[in-house]
Image (cartoon, rainbow, N blue to C red; front, side, top):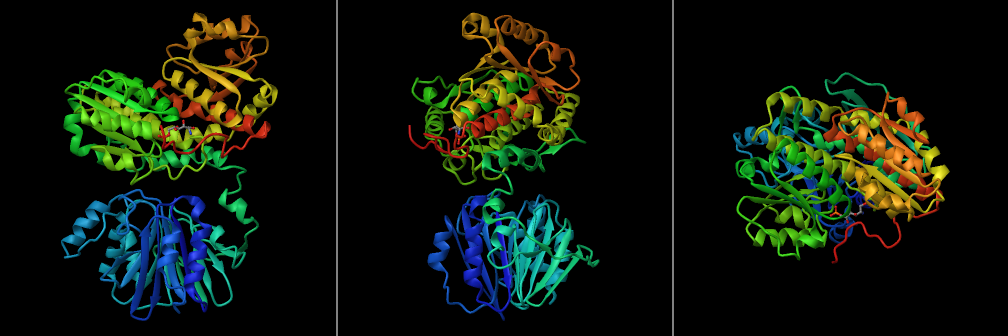
Length: 607
Ligand code: AGP
């Protein structure tokens, strides 16, 4: 997520802004910048890369005592110097930093270009800066309000103006902002981590509020200029706690971020009313995609498990032969790429060497190559013919959680997007999209009831071998659950299609061995119920993930973790959450380094 800092007061602003951005680095970013306001001038220093680049370029002796700073996690536009924030409007009259997404940025850009505005970058943020400048008539606060009335999407912004240099106007809609209250100074930030060094007295901006901030005054209103009274509160957290937002580990934080992350992933892309999917990154190649005769999904690790769900989704909704290949195998086995083959790489980091090389190989053999990536500007994102970003924000924990469910959500949208260009009916698409729209709230439901998961893990945490079973769409979820517990708790676990048990692995079952069975409602429920009996009669202890309301299963297994019902193609988005929590709790109870498991890297950029 992007980081925002602003300062108005009596002290030199540069050290305060840079130190504040340093405190926000944990949020993940790929470019940074500062803007310093003085009468008639705004000095901008910004660059792609780490904050150290800014520290080398900015003059720390500059006397300005007000300014804004930003660390950007790219969503629209690659992480380049030009796309870094702050962005300016009105030939340097206005400077703005932004966290969020301006969904109608294309139409606003067109409007401004019709009014002779020239754009430098490809970002939605520059559109907002130019729009404020367009409406500016000597009153920054008024211009900001007018511009925000035209915007749809989310924003946390801070704006400075060369004609009113002792003023910051901030506004919040969907991206938190907090204001530190000092003596003759105020510090605006995305979160308290950037403020704590100066004050623990803060005002939390509410949704839809606008703040007019001067060294000796702070005024809060609604977007329609109705005054809002706010108490000054004391921040109780330590810095460490704040970076983790009160969670013990980034993995747990990111597990709990999934409802919001999936909302961000779906935002502006699903139209429940019309039953349509909008994937801007695929529009230019939609026709060619619809003619695909075969789809190959290639990835590694968790991304491969997501790809396997994608295989089932594409074959069900698009009715095109689809196969999922481990990238490391695909690239070396002289793959058959014929006319009409589309190769889709799935990669959170966009830097995994095996996946990148597999896509290079496919492209050289004439395939259209697509990417589903989280990191904007990453190697894979830059080199594919087209693709879709996850928009789930930076994933800091080594074990992938919100990126996995983000990949599932994007694959579901892609399958529906392509399905509608083949045989998927508008009614079927509308039902699918309606179920997809409910997923974030259903995730919240699961995350509100985690006690059962913790109890299960306490009972079996000393068992060194677990099995995970699933059928249909939940077979890849079982594979992912086994990988999660392996990589963070070092427990050996194996995921299997449930029916495969009797072809050998059932020999592994010993008395009390934990066997996680994903037994949610669906066409194969009766089959997995039989598999549960096979495990139980051999002494295995079954932990079932079942659909809420299924009371019969309680009599058949040792533990049940209930999840809300959804259509089978979307069940892994829900069933994977208890499996993530089981892995997390096991790692904590076994004293493992949850966020940095031994031998693992967040992105495997070697073969
Ligand atoms: C997932 O928990 C692992 N950290 C690992 O399997 C990961 O999914 C794999 O290395 C692929 O990474 P990517 O998505 O960045 O390409």
